Image 1: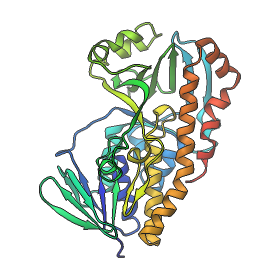
Image 2: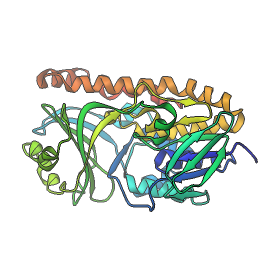
Image 3: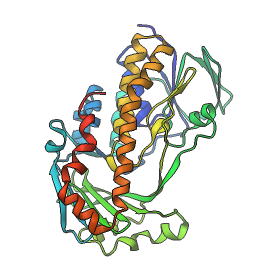
Image 4: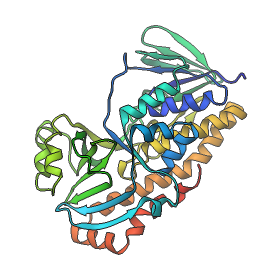
Length: 364
């Protein structure tokens, strides 16, 4: 089967998912990645049922579960460990698996699934020009002409910068640290510990490994804070202090979003965080990226490129906007007085656990 000549910029989760999805329609894309070699990067990921369903459509969900762990319950407790609210994930999603996995394992699964595709490492994109066809140029002096360029290069997308100008990601007022701890086989559930202006998430990702995510509200990531951040959580209940002992090399970061989402211009389209990065409080980053890849590949395979890009935006925009709106609601909830927040969660647990995901039960 022949089709449009496609370039995918970025070989992370979004880019490799797009490559896999296109290949299943007979379209072999060129994939470029700015890093010069693969490294086992990242920490853990919680994958709600819509993310797992999307991975299943790529034929990869079973491999992810084999490398990771099934999550069966979500809980919210206060920083002393006292229960506030909880719910089985089956009651949240109705059906479907929720999984947790190390990001490096998910990336390796996607790499294995796209090993027959041309992936060029160390290729830094420097320019994009053209209308009906796009000429891509790279820092090594090479160039190529494509019918479609897919920007899958993350929250600080170079494609977004080149094509859409100064639409930078916007901080949402949170700073976070992520790490994986080992030696805690008893931690399996998704559990959120909440304190005034602070939150600490734990979820088992297979074996005795635990993905840990800590954040502070209304902070900037200055060097002194990064050096002493663990002290902010030492008063949290067990097992948080023991987990913190393994957080010395935690990955720090500012939580940022791309809002309103940025979709396409001419023959250049964005997917995943490059288009619509969101606060992680719904764990929808990977889900939206893989869904983007599936929808775009399906449309590109049976329509002219211009029509496909219009249809892509029409199909994805309401769903992505819903996710961003729900993350904003959750962030507002966290800013309430602790006593008010606790009462709200206890009285309306389904509003916190179920309502944000209800439209996402349906296929994109």
